[in-house]
Length: 101
Image (cartoon, rainbow, N blue to C red; front, side, top):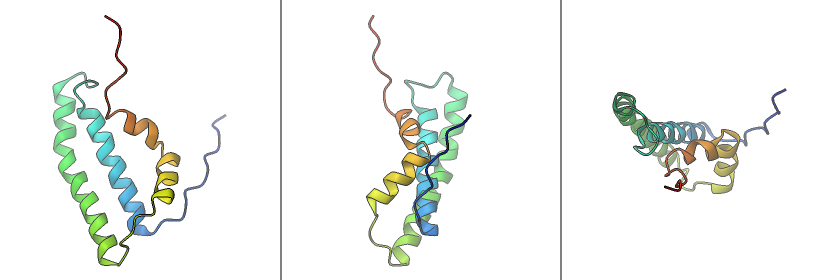
């Protein structure tokens, strides 16, 4: 049985797009990470897709700024990222634990 996840906090549409685009960029960076990727083709495809995801991230932030959403509510964003498995996803961007030689 899959445990029930806590509900996402209330986000504006632009905040939701920001979180989605950010996690999309993180996922791609994890696939590109040379300490974790196994083949150049997969990393290349992820790098090519990164441009589009970065554009989505920029557009979400631009929309927030244009609408007068000048503050990022970090506690709310943190809750949303945790519900969306952000800890595991961002861990793919960092170096793996070192192994004894």
